[in-house]
Image (cartoon, rainbow over all chains, first blue to last red):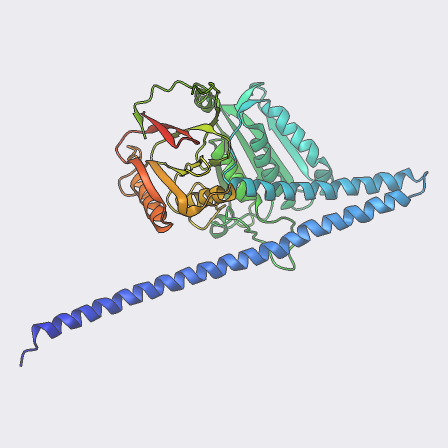
Length: 287
Length: 154
C-alpha cells in the first residue's frame, strides 16, 4: 500500500527540521566555547595584571623607602637602589603604556599623526632606554643603521616608538643570557625596513598564529617566567596597521625569531588629512 | 534673524576610529568598501560617526571599531554617554562600494552594508537615508549638529 503524499512530505519536513536543529545546536556549542574562552582570558588578564602592576610598585615603594633611610655617605648603595627603582618603574611604565594604548585603540580614538621623524635617532634613543636590561643580561647588541636613512622621514613617531619598544623589549626579554640580538635599519626604494633578530626560544608555527591575539602569552600561569600582560603584540599589530606598514615574523622552535617591519612614508596620508581643512566641498549630493 | 557666521571645527575621521562630541563639527571621511554610520540625536542636536572596514571581529587581536559589530555598538554607547536616548537616535549609512581590488568571493562592501542595516534594525534605529554599494568610493562630510551629509563620489 502506498503511503499518502502528505505523510511523505511531513516526514521530509521533520527530517529537515532535525537537520536544522543539529546545525543550530552546533552553533550554540561553538558560541558557548567562545564565551568560555573569552571569560578565561578576561580572568587570566585580571589576575596577571594584578601581579604586573603590584610587583613593580611594591618594589619601587620598598626601594625608595630604603634610599630615604640610607646613610648620607653611602652613595654606592643609593646609586644601586636608584638603578633598581628605575628598572622597576621602566617596566611598569612600559606595561601601562600597552594597556592605555589598547584601551585607546579599542575606543576608536587612535588617529595617526604623521610628522617628520629622524629614524636613526629614534632607534638609538630607544636602545639607550634599554641599555640597563641589555647589560644586565650581558646581551650582545648588534645595531646596524643605514647612513642613507633620511633625516626627516614622514611617519608617526609615537606609534613607531610603541611598535619598536615592544618588539625590542620582547627580543630582550626572551633572549637567553649572553646571546646576540641584531637590529638592522635600512632604506630600500624609499621605504624604511627594520629587522629585529633574537636567539631566543623561537615560536612554533602553531603559536605564530595566536601571538597577535590580545591577552595571549605563550608562557602563562602561576609559574610564568616572563613579565608582561599579553597586550604588546596585539597593540603592535594595530599600530602597524595605522601607520600603513607591514610586519612579518620568521621563526621556528629553538631557532630564534626575526621580525621584519616595513614602514612606508606617510607623506600621502598627510595630504589627504590636509584636505579636510577646506570648507568648500563642491558637494554632488546632500543627504 | 541672521546668524553670525562661525567657522565650525573640522575633524578627519580615519578608518577604524569613531567620533562623537557635543561640539558642532564637520567630520570628513573617505570610504571605499568601508561603511560610515552617522547617528543623530535631534533633541540634543548632536551627531556621531564611525568608519569601519570589515563586517565582523574575528575574536582575535584587539576588539577595535575596525569591525562593524564593534564599531556600531561603540558609537551608540558614545552617543548615550553624551546624553542621548538610544530610542531617539536616527541613522544615515554610507559606503560599502564594490572595490575592484576586492575579490568577488568576499564582497566586503556588501557584507559591511548588511551588518549596518541588520544591526541598526536590531537596535530599532531608523535609517533616514543611505547611499551604499556601487563601484565608486565616497568622500563624505557630516555636519554633526544639523544631521547633514555632503557626499562626493570619488
